[in-house]
Amino acid sequence: MEHVKLREKIGYGLGDAASSMFWKLFTMYLLFFYTDVVGISAAVVGTMFLITRIWDTFLDPFIGILGDRTHSRFGKFRPYLLWGAIPFGLCGILTFSSWGGDSEISKIVYAYVTYTLMMMVYSFVNVPYASLLGVMSPDPQTRTSLSSYRMTFAFGGSILVLFLIEPLVDIFSKMKIVDGVPSQAFGWQMAAVVFAILAAIMFFLTFSWTKERVKPIKEEKTSLKDDVKDLATNKPWWILLVAGIMVIGFNSLRDGSAVYYFKYYVEASDTFSFT
Image: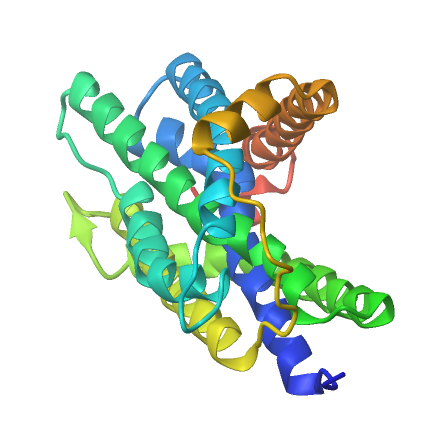
């Protein structure tokens, strides 16, 4: 059995660091960006989040089915990191961009389109990335070690966003003055550019530094229709689906309200760069 070296473990961890950077941006700051920067009502944004994430929850299994049926010289799952790195970054930038002028309808349509695309690309990359663990090594201890690196780097990616996002928004906002006021919209967009570049580089490194070693046993070929039918009648999957939606909803409410709390209620909120 080929030994998994430190560089490969780091490479695998970088993949979740990239995903976690934008996931933390979504859960902590996207609601604030839409309401206080773009100018969309909280009720509209909340409805959009609910609809998009329910759709995304149903999409994930189909991405998994697609990954299982992928055969390339790079393997089953690594190619998605290569193919999805740049679209992931571009969709992240578009999501944190303001478009539509003074028309609220245009802003809402743009938000729906870009956020839905972002979540689809997120699944396109993240589902195969999660599956990659199973084919990197057949050894349970090695997989546990890889999982530890993944969790550590995911935590690191989240901390990096929390540490840098507000200073970056403040710096970039001052680079574009609109009617004598720093442009918050430009600040958020350029801050997203920074994290998009970092995420794309990390995904490329994950693709380059990891290797698929576990070759599947001769597979029994089934049709997509049969796979969907099996999924639809899988009661544990439906339970996990509902639980996943509830967990995501709770985390989104908790994290999304934190920025408002510190901006509008914490006495020392003037230390933030949003005002």
